[in-house]
Image 1 (cartoon, each protein chain N blue to C red):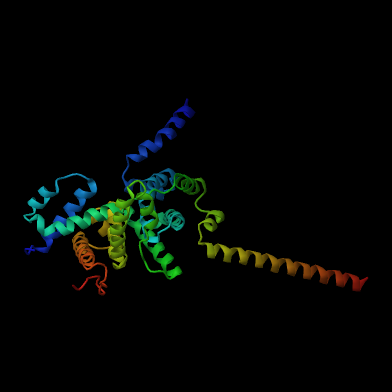
Image 2 (spheres, rainbow over the protein chains, first blue to last red; image 1 turned 180 degrees about the vertical axis):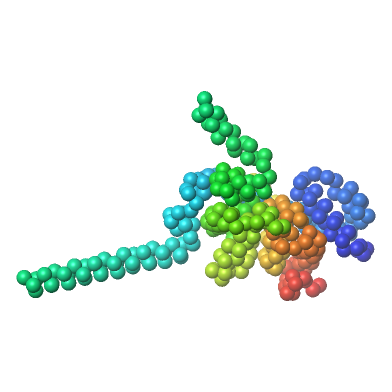
Length: 125
Length: 210
């Protein structure tokens, strides 16, 4: 491989990649424009082509895109439900357990207080 | 008559929002205009989803994290100031941080597991060709997986989201020249790795010693 200034090769690789991704432009013309021989960059051209066939875009489901937009737009900023819905599952479970434990604690206290009141009322009568 | 005019304005609004620049939409969203934020969402949801999908490797987590990116962006848009970081780059940075947290929580190595997608994209080819292509793609994917995280990120932003070097630079907080140089080194590393048949291990800079 003949030695080329790094910046020239870097610019060439960017131009080559853009042309391959856009599926337009003559690769040989681009290489000639940068004064490099095809053999010098053949390996790079092959890799860029292979990358462009392997790393391709995926589409999110329409349902997801639509529902998320509704969630974002339909609520006055984000409320408790949307906050919980998009928390990681582990955090959701922890939040559920904490809520349940809090509820149980309050109920127990309330029941205890009622039992005590009943006992006092009975003792007085 | 006034009601009719108002209704027409509302119906035509999404079309007029499409003509606005991101910076105008951000200003409107900051003042509580939900339609403006909705337009920004439409512009970037697919790119952000793609980025997250390639960093997590499954649709479920990609949906979950994409949702969190946009909820976080909406909650913090009032505090966003451009200062050299365009809105798109700001969104990608939020996505990058959430993906990093996701990897940290799971203690997983940051890889690009594309197998599910490749399996579906090859169905239409003949079995022999399919096997050959699959082998080649697997070798390339394995080489990509062995790259340092920032190089994987660069390849996703360039090939999947089709961003320019300048846009990638904004996201990765580097100059356009630095991105060009990093891309060059990434391609050299991939070429060397593939020539060595995937037996080499990259050093701490991601280079392969031949």
